[in-house]
Image (tube, rainbow, N blue to C red; front, side):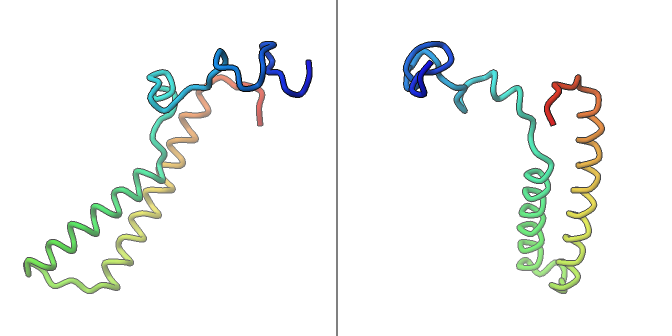
Length: 98
């Protein structure tokens, strides 16, 4: 096999060996949402909600307390989410890869 051939025997750019694309349903089912993505999304939503509440004049907010609260909440969510993710990963059979 030369360096220009794929493992199936065809040329490296052969269309018969295509990778899974983002629109492929098999790929979408195999990759769960990441904890960090969910936490950052919640931070953005919380900031947007706090800005709306502050602009409406319903509550007077101190920016430093808001940031401290968001950072504490985000840190706790990341740690708890990571522990839950690691716990769920331990139940899956090992593939032998490190």
